[in-house]
Every structure is written in C-alpha cells, then in structure tokens.
Amino acid sequence: MKKYPAVALIEFSSIAAGMVSADAMIKKAPIAMLKAGTVSRGNFLILIGGSVASVEEAFAEGLAKGENYVADKVMLPAVHPQVHDTMLGSRNRCSGDAVGVIETKTVATVIRAADAGVKGAAVDLVEMRLGDGLGGKSFAVFTGTIEDVDAAVQIARNAVGDTKLWLNDSQIPRLDSELAKQIEITTRFAAAAAHSLADGEA
Image 1: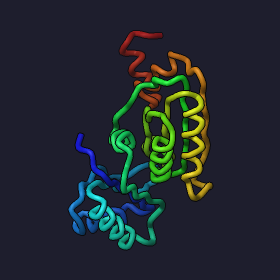
Image 2: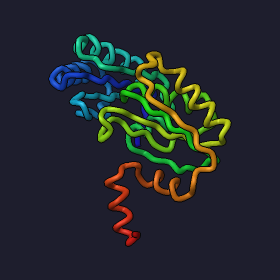
Image 3: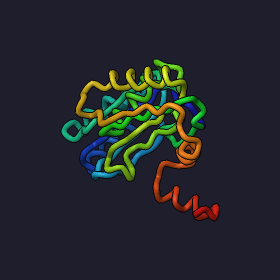
C-alpha cells in the first residue's frame, strides 16, 4: 500500500456538490483519489493523498467549489502511518492491556481525533469505521496500556474543535479475549454472524 505524506478528506452534505467538487480537486493538483463515494445520511466524501503542497491546493479547491455543502473536513499534512492505513481498511490486533473507543458524529472528526491520539500516546490503532452502516457516525479503537489508552482518548477528545461532533468514548482495561478476537475480525454485526456460522459455532 503506497503511503502519502499528506491526506485530506471533505464531507459534503450534497452528493451532486460533492461530485463536482471532487472532480475539481483532482483536476487542480497532482493528487491521488484514495476513496470517494456516499455514506449514510446521503453525504458524499472524498479522501485524497499526495505531497503536502498538492493536497493543500486540491483541498482548498474542494472547499471553495462546494462551499455551501461542506459538512466537515480534515487536512493532515503529516498523517500518522497507522491512520493512513486504517482509513484504507487495514486492521491491527488488540495487543495491549486495554482498548479505548472514540465515537464521533462525522468521518472527518474521527480521522482528526485518531491521528492526534496515536501521535500523542504509545497506542496502536486497531480499526477505524468511517460512516458506512453507522448512520454517518464513525469510531476508532486504540490499544495499549490503560495509561496510554486513557491518554490517547483524552488527546483525541481535545483535538476535536467542535464538541458537538464528539459523541462518546470508553476505556476498557483487560479486554475479554473473546471480544478482542471479535473486534480483530470485524465490528460489523452481519459479518460477525456470518463468520460464526462459517465456523459452525452456536
């Protein structure tokens, strides 16, 4: 998986405006379109990566083009490698003594918060779920020692400018091994049920 030094995401409340803005962003600067599409509540998201200068230029173009329809946004000029990879679907193990969960109202907010948390404390990111199947909400899961998980969650919360976008958080010491195993496989209920049936479990 190619890693980009900078990433940016814009969340549009209009699908039509989002598509027009995404097209303008791609044409404006030499960036990679990492993901684009709709999420729950009918929002349109575009996630881009590239050099800092290129991403900044495309990001500014997208904000200007879709100005009246920008629901949330984030620009990370030095994105943490774990945030980069988990945004694109990578998963890690619950290898620490504890886990912390942060839950936000938008995709951009959880990306900003997770990046701050993993940069500010000695934790790993297990997963980030971004919008789909969550009514537009998003969440991220940290793992590490209980002290580091507590610190990461606090740092993540402080990184959110608008407190209305922060929904909830939790810290779980000594996570049960069965729950840890399930989180490592998937946090999607339908997928979890299919996995259990495939294994012949009750």
